[in-house]
Image (cartoon, rainbow, N blue to C red):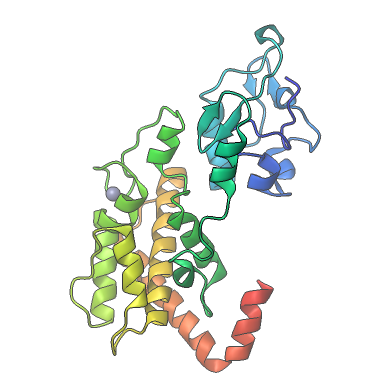
Length: 268
Ligand SMILES: [Zn+2]
C-alpha cells in the first residue's frame, strides 16, 4: 500500500522512474510522489493507455497481480537476485551477481561502433542481453498471453526466433545477402550472427555488416511492435525498402563528413 509507484521496485521492470524515465509520470498520468495504491480505484488500475513498449509491459504485468488492498496487510519486501527470491539479504549472492565479470563483452564492437545509428545500437544492445519484452519473456514473467509470433503466426516468439529463424526475418536476410553478393545469408544462432559482423570480404567489410545487422534487427522489432500494438501487418518486401534507404543514408552521412558524423552521434 505504501510503496512508492515511481521509486520502489515493485514490478519486474524494477524502479519505474528508471525504466520509463522522467516522461513516465506525465505519460502514465501518475504523480511523481504517488503510492502504488494511488494508481488504483475500487475497479482497477488508473493509468493512461501505454505509449511505449515498456509501458505496455507494465500494463500487461498489472493485469496479472491483485490490486493493493488494506485488508491484504502491510507491504513486505523480498530480496531478489537474478530473478530468484532470497531468504533475506545475501551478500555473497548479491556480490556475485553484480560484480564486474569481464572488462569487455565480446559483442561490444558490434553494438557500439563509429557510424552506428544510436537508436539501432541501443536496440541491439538490449537484444544482445535478451531483454526485449518478447512474448516468451513476458510469459516467463507470469503473464497469461498467447506467445505465438505476431509476424509468422506459427512458432513461439522468442528473440532468436523473431530475428533469426522466423520466415519474416529469413526474407530480410535473404534480400540483404543478394545486395552484398553473398549467398543465402542465414544464422543458426545469435553468436553466429555476431561472429559474421566481425568477418570481412571485399563486398562487405565489418562496418557495413554491422550497419546491416543493426538496421535489420531494428526493422524487425519495429514491425513486430506494429503488429502487436496496431494490428498493422506489412510484407517484408516493404520493410526491406526501409532498411535499404536507411543503410544508404548512414553510408552517405559517413562519406560526406566523417567529423560531423562523429560529433552528431555524440550529440544524439
Ligand atoms: Zn515468426
